[in-house]
Length: 308
Image 1 (cartoon, rainbow, N blue to C red):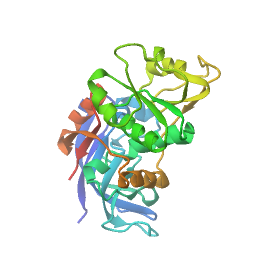
Image 2: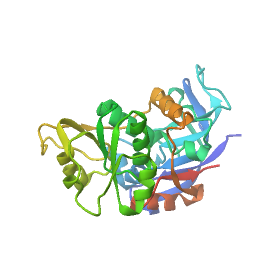
Image 3: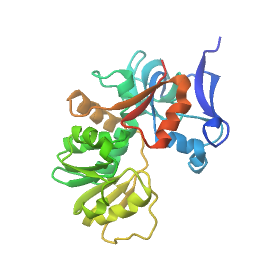
Image 4: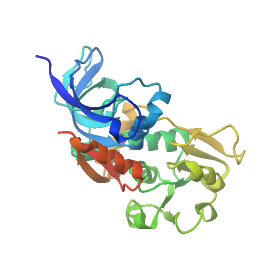
C-alpha cells in the first residue's frame, strides 16, 4: 500500500485563501537522495512571497508544495547515499515541500542537527543562518574588527546574523524598533539603533559592511552608512544599475544549500555561541496563521510549524 502524507500546497497564486492542506503519496528517494520525516519547519517571508506570485518569477510550476526549511529524521535512503542513514536527525533547507510530513531531498544538502537543540529550535536555523553567512561572510567578506550594520536585528535572519558576526569578531550595530531593543541587545550587539526615533543614516556611518534584511527605502538609505570602498549586501532588495554612491560595492545574495556552512553553524550552536530564538510555534493545521504573522512583519524571532 502506498504511504500517504499531509502537505501544504497552492494551485494558484494569491492570498491565504489559495493555501490548502492536502493528502499526497510519499515519494521514494532516488539515487543520492533521502526521505525525511519532518518534525518542524521554519516559516519565512519567502514562503508567502512565493504564494503571492514570486514563485512564477522564480521559475516554479504550479501546483507548488510550500516550505523551504526543515528539521526531522531520515526515514529512507536512496542508492549511493552513505553520509546519512535511517534514524539520523537532520536539518537544512529544501527547494520546496518543507511544509509536509515527509520530503525527499538531496542527501548532500542536509547535515545532522545540533545535539543540544530539539527539532523546533533546529528548524529555526538553516535558512536564516545560511542567508546571514552567505551575505556577510561570502559576499561581504566580513572579518574580525570590521564594523557591521544589520538593518533588521530582531527577525529570524537578523537575530542569527548578529550572533554569527559577533562570533567572527565584528563590531555589530543593529537596527530595530524600541519594543525590540531589549531582545536585540541581549544578542550581544555593540550598538543599537531605534529606527523609529530618528533616521538611522543620520546616526550610523563609516560601516565596512552593511547587511540589509529589509529592502525598500531602508536599502536605499543604507548607502549613506557605508564607508568609501565598503560593501552593502542585501538578501531582499533588487539593486538596479544606478547606485546612489559609486564607491560602494553592492551584492545581492540568493541563499543556497551548503552542507559545510550548515556544519559551521551547528558548531557555533554546540559551542554555545549561536542560539536560535523561536518566537511563535503553530500547529501544522494553522499554517495560514503562521504565514499571516510572517507577512505582518510583527514577529520577534522565528515562526515555526510543528509538523509532528
